[in-house]
Image 1 (cartoon, one colour):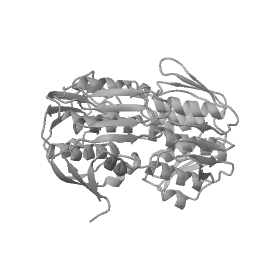
Image 2: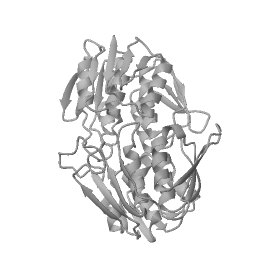
Image 3: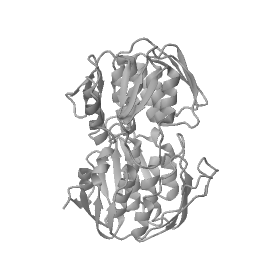
Amino acid sequence: MSDDVLIVSGGSPLKGEVRVRGAKNLVSKAMVATVLGESPSRMYDVPRIRDVEIVRGLLELHGVKVTNGDLDGELRFDPSNVERAGIDEINVHAGSSRIPILLCGPLLHRLGHAFIPDLGGCHIGPRPIDYHLEALRRFGAVVDKTPEGLHLSAPDGLHGIKYELNYPSVGATEQILLTAVRAEGVTELSNAAVEPEIIDLICILQKMGAIIKVHTNRVIEIEGVPRLGGFSHRPIPDRIEAASWASAALATRGDITVKGARQADMTTYLNVFRSIGGEFEIDDNPVDGGIRFWHPGGDLRPVALETDVHPGFMTDWQQPLVVALTQANGLSVVHETVYEKRFGYTSALNQMGAHIQVFQDCLGGTPCRFGRMGFRHSAVIAGPAKLHATDLIIPDLRAGFSHLIAALAAEGTSRVHGVDLINRGYEDFEAKLAGLGATVSR
């Protein structure tokens, strides 16, 4: 039997406590930011996930000394000896993550050149790097595409730009922030992403000595400085993992307390959770607080929602929640406006007994940029549906956790293939499941 298969006996409520650490979508970017500094940095509450291991390996290849601190979840970074890494060494990480593209700006500032291998990540749409490369060229980078990857140089240095994104892309906003902070002059970024993870990255860069102003209407102004120091930071908690466990509580008629979850980052999700019929209770204890999520009994209510950039309903929240919506009494509508191919996971749910149809039209909301492009980006979920066990193959990180929730909610024993992909973003998820009373085994 493959070690990458999880045997899940479903049909029982999940009850108990789990803890979330620093946000996956912030921690890896903060690790990249350490390259910009000329003195050591320290980060706390770092989750033990695959993405952290990948970025750690990339930093170490470039001469950053990364060590474990005295506290559980503490990492220390010494970037004083940043150096050029060999192409063959970097290519070992090709296809394993999309983080390497964010190293371009920091490496150009520190070394004057950078090499980026083929990028990986979850297959939920093209997620082109055109924004990244166009912005880097505007800063003054020269980009040479070769069969092995991208070679970048900055013969005349990097200089501030005035730039407007066609879409408030999180990745492109991060790229411009990490490049602009040490570019000569002022950079003005319009239509920027303003997710909580972006604001936390700005806090880190400010600790390092950056000058960054966040204006109204998604405008960020960065005044370049000649050098940056290190930082000490505790990242915001992972709001995606917190919502995933909340959706698991709802789908299995359970009761899960998510220690470390923070209300301020989840207000949009909490409103939808309550609209469906879920209950939650917030504990603001600064040491051991969190949010308790539970199914109060009775019927869940259907909803109509659409994903959007912050402060809208986060795209990474919808997949786990759709599993819970299969148990709601009536028709729910979910309109995905961030990634055009994010409903591929629903076919597996239908095999388990769910009733989900996907459409090309913009249903339940305003027309979006995918409306006339032929993508099936709206879903109608009819419930309640009795889910039954089956064999499942995980296609990507968030869909994988959704399949796992479905297996836990279904009657019978499921075999979930490809579960190691979940380790990219969920720390110790098998131990957490066991602590919640789930019956799982390899």
